[in-house]
Amino acid sequence: MSQRVRKLFGSIAILVLVTLYAVLATTIASAKLADAGGWIHLVYFLVTGLLWIVPAMFIIKWMMRPDNPSG
Image 1: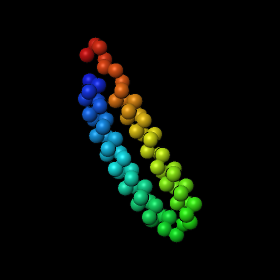
Image 2: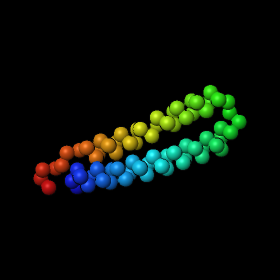
Image 3: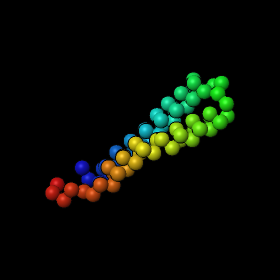
Image 4: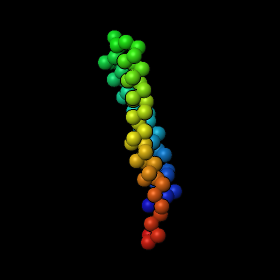
């Protein structure tokens, strides 16, 4: 698969990842943190706001892999 095609699929995958992750994180927050204090909300959204970077990093690393010269 060429790098150009990987970038296309990777971009779509990152958009899907971020969308689903945001919905999931917000759903969990509204279900479990409704009565929690402000500091709990701050820590939760700080952690979940940064956690999506881990899978996105692997997708970007895969996207940027150079083309295989043998085919």
